[in-house]
Length: 152
Image (cartoon, rainbow, N blue to C red; front, side, top):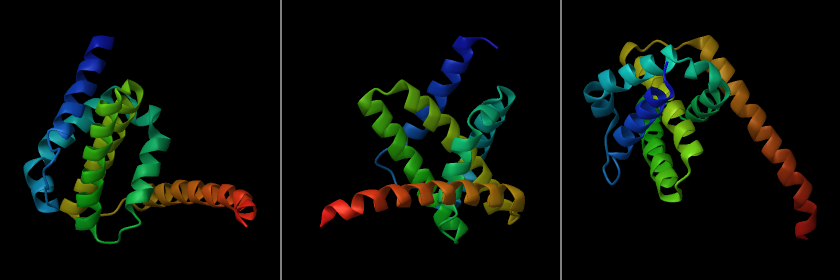
């Protein structure tokens, strides 16, 4: 696969997500009107094996989304976070972060939309995501604890 194609795909995904800046899109609209586009992007990313390359990042964001029990809220807030992340990347002109967020958020959104539409949870994937996210939270808590004693 040509490098130019990969860059083009990432830019297309980023522009798609960025197109929702300053818009509020509810979960049913995301799932029904944009499922095909998101699924198509996810399929192309998987064909390029970006799902393997960015698996840990995918699991972190998916795990973070599971803090919300309600699937509608998970879809709505994850979509909103994706738009915010892409907007910030564009403002900061951070190409590496733009690539990462474009790939990871499309893969996560695709996964959440599938769950939303089918009501089926990939238990193994969910457990992996929750475990990865929990490890990061524990690491952060340990770091914060180190500095806590200096605050008095």
